[in-house]
Length: 149
Length: 148
Image 1 (cartoon, rainbow over the protein chains, first blue to last red):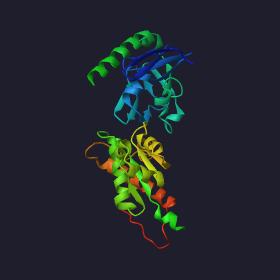
Image 2 (spheres, one colour; image 1 turned 60 degrees about the horizontal axis):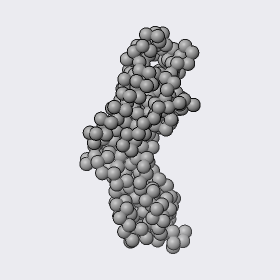
Image 3 (cartoon, chains in turn purple, blue; image 1 turned 135 degrees about the vertical axis):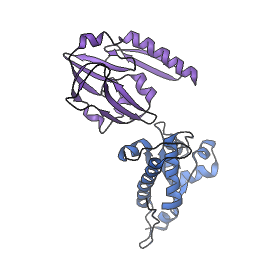
Image 4 (spheres, rainbow over the protein chains, first blue to last red; image 1 turned 90 degrees about the vertical axis):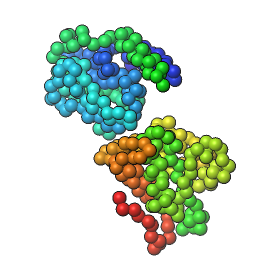
């Protein structure tokens, strides 16, 4: 189980897993040897709403950093997620077809989206945010959104 | 079949979420069931009346099986029926129903789009089938079926 940074904004509590990196929109990337597992941050999934469907790029697809890696349809919005790494999709979470709500229920573990075979990880990692930096960014965004309500 | 099973009605309690697409789907489905598909076997109950503690409505819910339709995971309709002493025969979540009918993407609030209306119709037909299981009609009685 990962450790978390946690903050409560208004009535919402958000967690950020400390064992991975994040892109600006809130897609996380966790290294597993030569591979990168990706998914949505807790903040991104809560902000987006209950997930109805996911469409992840199929096995074998080559993506560059920032390319669209998945589309998620929630009860609120359709969001296009950009890849936090360059490489090839080698695995898609098999439960996404039948139980995409795993993204909402367990965003850092069973709700992962895909695994990439990264080809430029060192360069990509330098463009991502570490957990502390993402936590600060997320907290500011959450406070701003609550202030708008 | 007993006289008791014929006299009972199934109460249909939809989400009261105003300003939410999935709430509108839940209410539209409830209207289709109670007004078009199974008017003789069902009774529409406004969730707001349960929230306000209306005694007549609470008694109705307590005395009859309920089908709840929730627009979000807060499941207010289901919770209020249980808090009112009722029994939920089945709870439907609009999101789960939509996952079974991906082709009917609901949009709109005050006025649902075509996808939302068709999703509501599909949900209503599932509820109507459930109502038939709960309160079977006498042999030969014809149920109203709306073309969809």
